[in-house]
Length: 110
Image 1 (cartoon, rainbow, N blue to C red):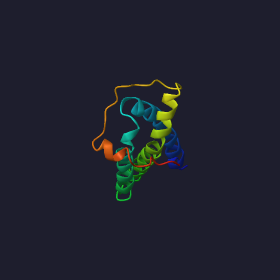
Image 2 (tube, one colour):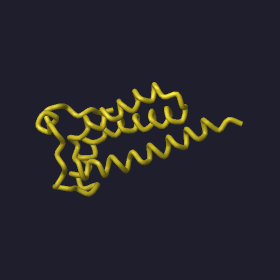
Image 3 (cartoon, rainbow, N blue to C red):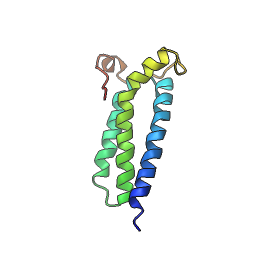
Image 4 (cartoon, rainbow, N blue to C red):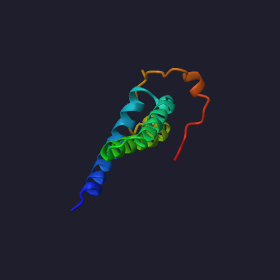
């Protein structure tokens, strides 16, 4: 019996579930202007996963990278939800490097 697919599915479910948590916390403490950094980290992890020989390491890197890319597109929507009062709002967020430049870019959406 091959359980690889089962465990990959289970790990995918857990990583995506954790993605909801880190998007909420990330926007609360960092703010939505951090989205390019999360997208770059996710893209880097997906690219690294292409070159890993170990199947498990490749799968984990790819899923985590995909979750980071997805999460980066959710930062702006999470900021709107926090402003509406659906989630805790934090006034004292950590501004990213080049925040003035990033603020002029349109945040991505899926």
